[in-house]
Image (cartoon, rainbow, N blue to C red; front, side, top):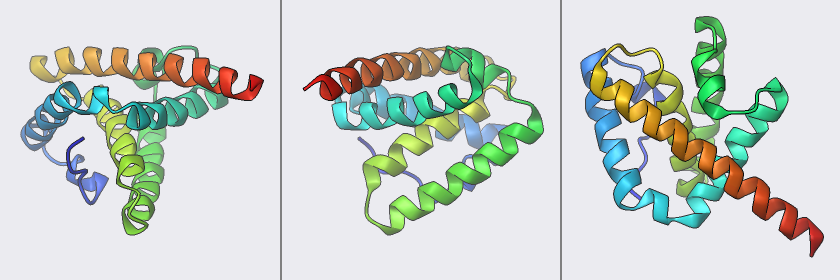
Length: 142
């Protein structure tokens, strides 16, 4: 797991800046993040909560269907949570927030590299949701 950014606003910059940050996030997720089961559990729990509230079944559809206003409100909420996690030293939680935010922002970018990465990140988040739900049920049964 790489070092999360201190503020999600770092992601909400120009398209070129976002692309560079997004590529770095994707490389980190590929190299370390996806192997970190605790981080993926957190990604899955955050995304599952958002999906449950919206009654949408997949992250890919959720991220693609947010209105600009809903996306902005969501990103501001995630930024606040991320700052709180960072202040508490809960870097895995902040890392999970960063992944969710990157996915939401990536859906607004026209760059083909970002679009390709966005599809992969959406699949990873949907997998994390499935992992979370599967394991949450088995924990509840114990």
